[in-house]
Length: 243
Length: 72
Image 1 (cartoon, helix red, strand yellow):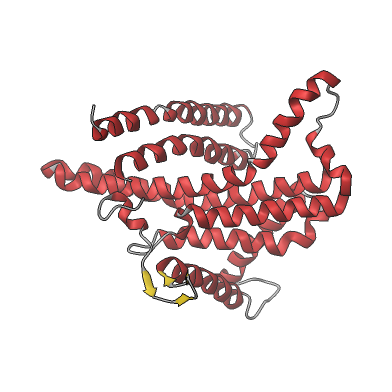
Image 2: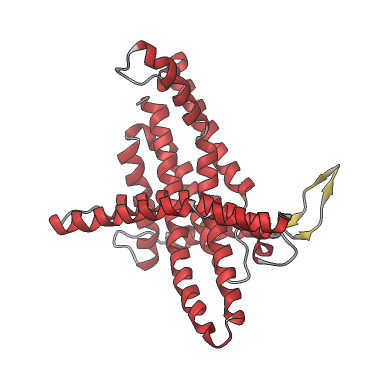
């Protein structure tokens, strides 16, 4: 769907190092490069910030600790002490999405979270993992998740399929929410930038709008990573506590 | 009607979804302001911004469809 030129061309995936294994195209693309950069940046930042962990934290150490404590607090609040084993995964997920969104805001870079396959892979990992946790914890009783409490029998015939559908649709909404936010935001920036030349003398108006939109995009980048984390926590809570 | 004009009309119709997002975001921040006016010490910005992100996302689904129709 990426056009040759136009607002959507910024999402084109380019092969930087073409690689073909068998019939598969496993080229190292700009998307892969940004993902590697994201992982490296997150790892280096956390290691560097905590290199000499002291009781009274310095500037970088307090940033790292604030992010960690925020995730820790969310998991404690929503999942409870049983969520502790899943904290490393949720923290990694949050850092990956957050740094990916923020790296996408760097000019001439690439936002890998604006591709639905990336966000869907993340969401599907969360969904499958959470479902397996629920099944291993509760066995057959896991199906009680689909039966709301205190509902008369005939109404259950209607409500259970709805609950099942709303459960199965979760990975899609989780993926589309992040993807649509990133993609629509970045497309909007380009469209308003296009108005600058076409409006001539009044071109400063869209520039002002673009400055505002960039600020909004930074907010959205952080907020969507937070929303991704909080919804993953809520799904985990459902699997562990069954309502 | 040729394909291009049908696409443009479709994109315009898809943008109607933004009505819902606008009402939702307006409701959220109206409730935030009145909540903070009644109890200035309440710490409710976190849930408010979570609600803002969730409401904004629904509108963006429609906007995304419009963008794909126009430029895809």
